[in-house]
Length: 136
Image (cartoon, rainbow, N blue to C red; front, side, top):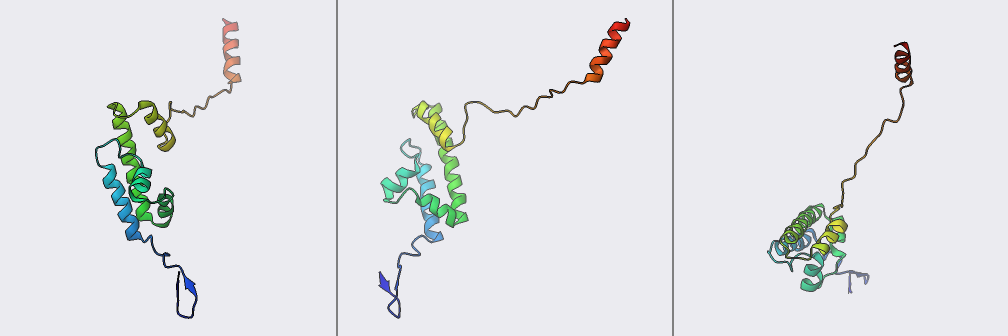
C-alpha cells in the first residue's frame, strides 16, 4: 500500500479494472471463442487457465460496465452456437452439450404451453337442447 499526502494509505489497485481493460478482456474472450476449436468453449478456461484471472470477474465487470455486459452477451451467444454446432457434428459429447445448453442457455426438453381451458358450462344452451329434443 502506498500513502497519500498526509500519511493516509490508499488502494493503488482501486482502478485496476477500468472500462478499457474490461473491454480488452471481453474482446479477447470473443476472439478466443471465434477460434474453431472444441477446446475454446468455456469462459473459465480463457480466464483462469490462460490468463490467471478469477471466474467471478465476468460477473463483477458486467455489473460495473454496460459495454462489457453487451460484449459478454455476444460471447454467450457465440458459446451457445458453438456448443450446438459441435454437438451436431459429434465434435463434443452430445449429452454434455445438452446439459450445458439446459443449465447455461435456458434450453428445455419440451415446450411449455400455457393452456387455459374454458370449463364453464353454458347451462342455457344445454337446457335449450334438452327442450328441443323433448319437443320433437
